[in-house]
View 1 (cartoon, rainbow over the protein chains, first blue to last red):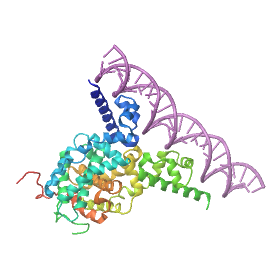
View 2: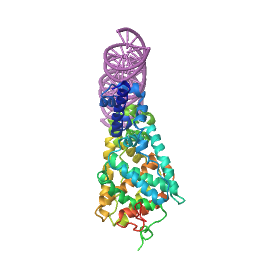
View 3: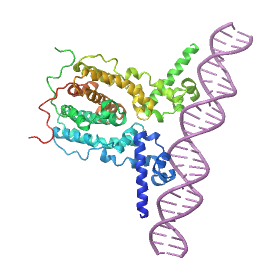
View 4: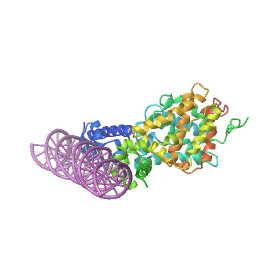
Length: 198
Length: 198
DNA sequence: CGGGCCGGTCAACAACCGTAGAATGACCAG
DNA sequence: CTGGTCATTCTACGGTTGTTGACCGGCCCG
């Protein structure tokens, strides 16, 4: 194995360990020394390669650009966007998306993670907005986004309730009508009955 | 002012400062020294009163039992539970619920916060479950819960999109049909059209 | 084959953290 | 008035953290 290969491999194993720890412990509780030990190298080497802890996080959280943002939501009507969103959610629901979780868990305490998350979420948000015909499209898009993130957080980070172990398909099917009423103007007319109405 | 009063007042001002910092920075980045400085006292005093940082957090996060869990969701059909949930969400949507945010932001890194959150969420969850007549009631309840938390996190912690500044009423109204389709078996039949179907 | 590049280790520093305990000084009871 | 309680502060300790720079040794180029 050539020298460059060796280096890239070591670098990658550091990144893998870092991703894992960031996802499990969040930014603050993840220490460079622990990452180094998990990767089987010295802490100094991590600094030598990545320069700074923030930078290590940046590099470790790079690929969720792929995991986090749905890949280029194709335009289309509000009907199609729902299916695209559901498909994107579904793919994130089987198999732990480690890099995404690293970003999500660190999001609330690390400013770089927060910005990275915003950068991944905003274009997606505006694409959803564009596909919704109503006046309050922006808010509806935000709600759709909030639901997606709420589900992922509750499933992977909080591990609360049935959401932790339910099958992706089951979740998707329950969410579909929900998404449809949000993405389109149609509100089920008969079911709108706020509180007291005989 | 008597001695006991003075003490309780100082203690309270420490708690206020602690809540604020935990809500803004999360558990790890909040330091006892900083809390003390914000409260205008010495760090040692904080230790003297609260013994430990974990304990300080516990005390600072006590009142969200009131903020977090909807107060005694009254039983009732799936229709009523929707309105109760929406009302609970609505009340949390105007005015920043500082203590709740402290718990939420620290939840992902501090085990006490996580447990506290679970303790507040689980009874609520089972009450929702009880009000839903379908077989997959547990999952539906979890989804409802996930949506609520997703909305709050995106509004207060992430401050992403229109959700950050929209009026509570507007959010509630958009969410209502969503909640109804989740809490009841009724699925809008005509709108179910997965992908390609002519 | 020899010398420099480079992957990698080691030891140490400065800062900060939670925490402990002694010291101070004002207040209240007897 | 006096003695002790108690709110409050000060100083310091041990540990961990991010980060640094010197050092070592094998690989590759000329």
